[in-house]
Length: 236
Image (cartoon, rainbow, N blue to C red; front, side):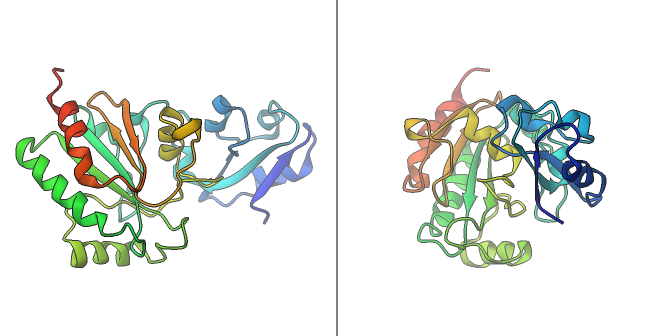
């Protein structure tokens, strides 16, 4: 089955077939070249698809992505944990969250140690108010090839990681996790570029679910202590 279908007009048989015959574990959603508000919509019939501009591309994605179709804020997302179970980010309301895309075979991989040190240091001062979420990704130099179990074991054995390492995802492209699509839109990088450039980019989300900072891979975890504490010590 083709992984991508293109909408030409309402009678497009390829798209109708793609919708009708999609595997139960997958959904059909617009690709990133669709108008931004439309990218979050789950397509279930050709009439819906026909409302998109001619040439709009659609792709298959895990059904989990479809549950994020109406997500508009940080707390609406439910990324998957290491066991493939949904984690409602609403559980982190009132907390400051650092989101990092990670890899096990990268020159920046030693940042795991810095992240763990940062995590423990801030948790000592604010035990219930801060969390780091690591999202393994294999899109940069194929530097995260392992399974979720292998990644978990690597992090614990080599760096003693105690913060959550989530299910492996894509952060760019048609299959990018919806959370990362939202983060990139909320806080573009230099010159307005949204794409994640490499492993260990970092997003800081405040107690209200607003993205307050984005840092490149070269920014060491210890450099983030000050902005994190600033957000933690703000009056709610």
